[in-house]
Structure formats: C-alpha cells, structure tokens
Length: 450
Image 1 (cartoon, rainbow, N blue to C red):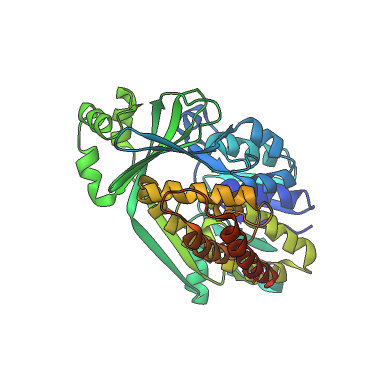
Image 2 (image 1 turned 120 degrees about the vertical axis):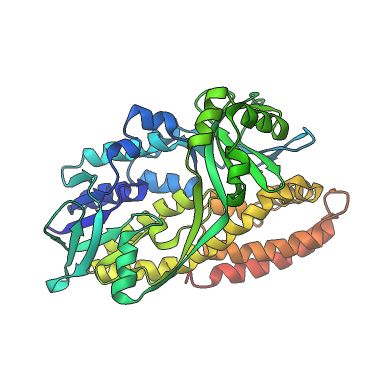
C-alpha cells in the first residue's frame, strides 16, 4: 500500500487526506498546531470568522459528497452592499442572472466538516502538534520526512506540502534544490472583528463594504440576522493609532467612520488585543521535486481581496487528483499538475491584488455603478456570449489565466460601450461591438490551457 505524508491539516490538507484514502492510499497528516487552534473546540468556533465559498470550492467539495452539507451551513450572499461615507447605501448584485452562489461559511464549521470526513477514513492518521521539520529524498524514489518532537525520520512514497504561506515544505525545497520563490508582504494588514448592522431587505444582503480612504472594513453575514463577521484592513503603520486607543475611544472611532454599525464594548476590547494579520503573496516555482509537491498557499498564496484563496486551494486538490488518476506515479502527476496550474495561479494573484483598488477606491465612484449596470445589461441581453469576468471567476471553473485575458477584452468592450448617462448603448452599436468581442473571445478559448 502506498503511503503519503501531508504537511498541514488545513482545509486543503484535510481534503487531500480524505480523497487519497478513498483511493486506497494510507495518509499520515501532520499539523504543527494543536487541534484547539484550528477550529475543533467551542472556543475556536466562537473566534472563527466567515469565508466566501463559491463555485470552485463547492464543486471540489461535491467530489467528496460534501457540497450539500457545506451549503446547509452557509449563508448566501447576493451582492456587495456598499456603505458610502455619506451614509448612502448601494447594492451591486454579484450575478445578473441570480443563479450563482457565494456562501458565507464559518471557517470552523467548514473545517469541522472536512475533519469529520477525515476521521471517518480508516486510512487517515491525524497528528496535531507534530509539524514537518524538513525532508530529504530517500532511496527508490521515496521521501524521508522529519517531524517536530520525533527523533527518527519516517519514509513515504510522496509528500504533499499544504502547510500554508509559511511552509516548511517549501523552505526545504528552496534550501536543498535552489528553487526560487518570492514572498511579498503588503503594507495592508488586517484584524478580524464581530459586528452588528441593521438587517437588509430580502434579496439585498451580501458582502458589506465600508471603503474609507486608507482603511476598509468588510463584513460577511454571520449566523444571526444583523450579525457580521468582519475584517478591518488598514496600513501596518496605522496599528498604534488605532489599537493604542482604549476600548471606548476605539468604539468612538468606529462610530465616526462606520456610523451604521455597532462595535460592542467587549468586542472593542478583544479587537485591541488581537494580533495584526499579515497579507502576503508567494510566487515562484517549480512547486514540485520528484514525489514532493506544494499546493494551495504553500505554492501560490494570494491576497484575500477576490475571495478566491480557499476556493483556489480546493480546486488545486481536485485538479491534482485528476492528474494522479491519469498518471503512472506521483512524480509525473505532480509535474503535470504544476504545468497545468502555474499560469492560473499567477493570473489569480494579479487579479486578487488588482481587486483591492476596486474595493477600496472604485466602489466609491459613480463610474463603478455605471460599469456594473452595463455588465448586467450585456449579460442579460447577450446570454452565453458575455459572461462578466467576476462571474467567470466566482460562478464558473474557467481557468484563471483565461479569465484574466477575457477581462482585458471585456474592459476594452465596456470602454467602447459606456455612456456618460449610464443608459444602455444603442442596440446596433452593442450588437456590432459584441460580435467583435465574441470573435476575439472564441479565439481565446481555443488556445491551450497552458
């Protein structure tokens, strides 16, 4: 029986453990953190915030028979609710057709869903508090892995590094093989916060955004009506100016900048003491070396501003399993996966970073509203021809690299059709321009995926 070590018992690590065990492979899943830090305790569940689970992630969960259960614990988000500094509210639907799904899911609940599936697999062994230290190639194409708190290394047929942006699997790959990765730490940082806001009308709830110059607050629907699982983004240099305040002063700052929400006193105190989260990206490669492979954030961490990090990681797992099913061994499957996925990872990184500008700046402008109206009009008038790039990212499985190239075509089309008044363009002009766009798009889709 083949034996695989997975470093990192996050969502991707758990997913791969379940899927490989169901293929008759013995899996040893190692995590440096204790279970109490990952969402398996009541305290961790209370501290957990929500994630945006969309089509790519749901499709991957469906391959394990878990999509229905994930949908049950999620709250559907239909669009962006923009809270302007003037007090004006603007709702922008995610999907003009109303069919696409984005679910706000508690991280701890989704984690427990996958952890429970892993515990049910007899071929999966979970070891918390025992992370990977390093690894080396062994005899006969195997891998020797050393762990914290264990004196002797263990031998496996393959090693999957799902150990996040601070991956030790990647660090060993860089050190032993001279593989080049680049880590970029952004000036923007974040803290998670629980908030309350007035419930929205039916059909108009979703991701709440408060864009305010150098800071931005977002909130995903929580378990109770009017409860939000929020994230405050701010420059790292502003940490002392914000969290050096006492709880009452911090509440007052929230009331001034975000007057239509409530920051309870207890949450204000807790917010002051929470660590400031880093926002980092990882680029480089190759992600594999023989029977060793990096997946998810360990290979290609992206910024959170497009809500695709988790969805991309779960899609990584699904595509990797397809490669394993088709290849003659771990090493060729890992190489095939890298060749298939690297351009998509680069494209997602670019689009995620660019989306920060849209969320923090463009959502505050009338031009943004006009563009979204035009996109909705085109999607409705030309179904099957014009698919907004956001819909292709979130409600479709089009490769990210093709979405990025399609987005460039769409930006040119929108610029040609946009009217100053925001009214739809003349029908003849629209049909002519969309026909030219369709020809260019068809040529794009005929290109190889990589």
